[in-house]
Image (cartoon, rainbow, N blue to C red; front, side):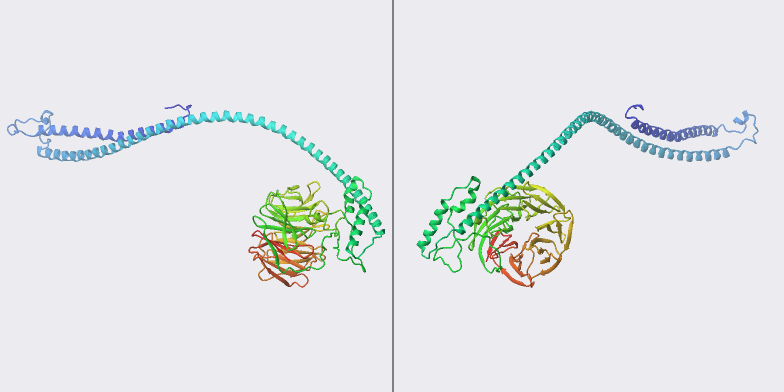
Length: 618
């Protein structure tokens, strides 16, 4: 047995306890047999003695006489009267013998029972001994396993100690690296501030130079116009005379002195033939009239009635559509991560350009409104540039948690406005130059400085933002929690909240910024009068259903009508003043209409759907 100091001491204790219990049981049962066996032996001896004595007392036939018989009582000197008779003694001895036989039988029966019990106990003892041997083997194995585990524990402790030392060394190294990183971040922040300051200074200088150049250009143009107005031009009704007059005018302009290098671009227009508009009382017989190109301005919107062109424009569903400021340029964006630019030529759409590089599905497109605010085009703008949109900027919201900026004429993205933590659902230019606003499903609206591609302000809007629009000093956002929120771009807080019945899918602001059109998932359009901040009209129609959380509805350019597409592929047009449904156009759309756009001249409407189609209406 192992001593107390050995690791297996608890096992040895219970083992000794079992042995002691077995020995105690053996002693107890042996004590019972020790009392029984001597008694049984004593009875046997007594029986043998009585048997011998009875044999001696039995009378022999020839020698039993009263005179010759000498018994033991005669030797002891007892009287014959005191000696019992042989018959009595024999009966007594027989009774005692019978009693002894009964006792011996009982004792023998008990001996047999005890022997059987002893055999049972011996078999149990053998079983216990076998179990004890098996337990001893198991204990030996467990001791070996314990020794191995103890060795592994020691090894692990040694490894942990080594790893702890390595961890402390790495921790110290990380602390040094973090300190170095903080220093580098501080230096980078300082450099960034200096860079921003330098960029701001350079931008201010560049703006000043551009302003001076524009003023000089305008002054030169004004002087040239005054000179041209003072000159007398003879106009004849004959075509030959007209041609001579025009050639004479061209030669006169060609002989003008060359401008300075900075003025070449502004004076290129004077090298082209100059033409005048018709005046009252004069006519130019048969000659085509050349006018200055102007951006179409809508005087009265015409309702679309027929389909002019249908195209499978994208590889998958089309999510966004937008007309350019000149109404002849169109942009469409889809889930194929492409933006296609189209020219509206007569009654059809012609491919202009494809803008690539978007990191996710396109959810919104917008053109830079800086050109939109000026109806006449600059004197030095070529008609081809106006038609193709050269110089315009396109802003798109994408599902890769960013908005991206392109310049028309360049296929790849110019800037990426990253900073959102979820899908960007809306991106719009502000009326202020080089500024934009984006809305996202991360419950934020961000304002951006496009000159530096820098987020100038982040607004927490408390709910998924599905669309945004911008006024002069206000940002309006539509949300998934059935609310429209108004934010002052000069202050940090929400100025007003207007609840609507349903998730807001789109917002459209009228050109006079006095009315707001919202589309929501309760299958209604609402016109909000921003002067009193009340819902003025609610548009419903049988069959009209909003097909998705990004279904777009728009005002007509003169705010006379409201237009939206339904999930059945039809277009619905309501009169804003009366609230009546003016028209329902069922065209080639076989799936839900995602977005619609109405050109600024009011002559064309374009709709896009989930089945890749782009439809031009007139």
